[in-house]
Length: 272
Ligand SMILES: Nc1ncnc2c1ncn2[C@@H]1O[C@H](COP(=O)(O)OP(=O)(O)OP(=O)(O)O)[C@@H](O)[C@H]1O
Ligand SMILES: [Mg+2]
Image (tube, rainbow, N blue to C red; front, side):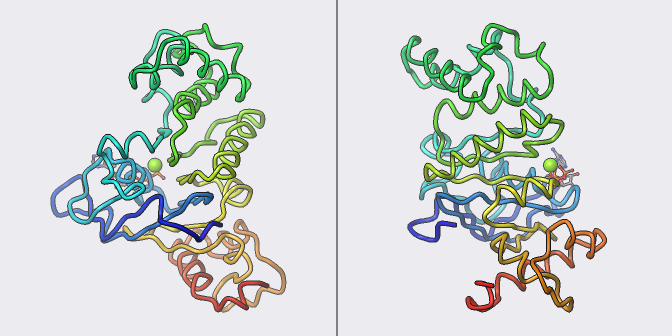
């Protein structure tokens, strides 16, 4: 986990709801830096998707502020730095061919066609979908569509990737490509924030685990969380997140307490 430098993403005192008087996000604070892969867990309907939309600047907070590399979320400068993969790929595919789809962001930013198409082909090759370039996005399988949607974001090299359930319904090969892209993004100094129910994804890829309960986030380093284990349960060996979730029997408050405890553990205890 990178702890140095300015936050790439910062939310301060953010409140938001879809209906007046019914907030989903309640005074949320969050910050993350380049090199991090942050997993956001939480019960269904807790606001994970809403949070990603706020971080992307696609929803305006009632109160508080979100900044991307110091720029207000939603501003043209901030939008260029953020790529969001929606829960459903169909929400972001609308071009007649896969090649057009992937090149689209660069073309609309004014890149010459040849350059945009070359970049699209390069990204497609890196994800193993170059054989799909002349197909219609809408006619592809779900997993193929999800990789095309990812490619359409990676092509403009955003510094912040926001991924909503990126592995849902993917086979092992497609999931491996998705994880490879996330790891490479972080290794190059980018930040990835992943909303998910997938405990394996959290364990394999995240440097930090955050739990969204009651509209706020509790965060801890993923390894520290696994070492600190559950309040009141002496962990003789590192606890797996799956074991932790099952010990909590789906009680997110209990997982949240474990995360908060791990986050406040003294540094020596955290080295394990
Ligand atoms: N467009 C909308 N209009 C009104 N209410 C909404 C809208 N989108 C989400 N909500 C409500 O906001 C709350 C948070 O929803 P959200 O989709 O952010 O949760 P989530 O944590 O992503 O859930 P899941 O794990 O099922 O994906 C829920 O109560 C949901 O019903
Ligand atoms: Mg969701």
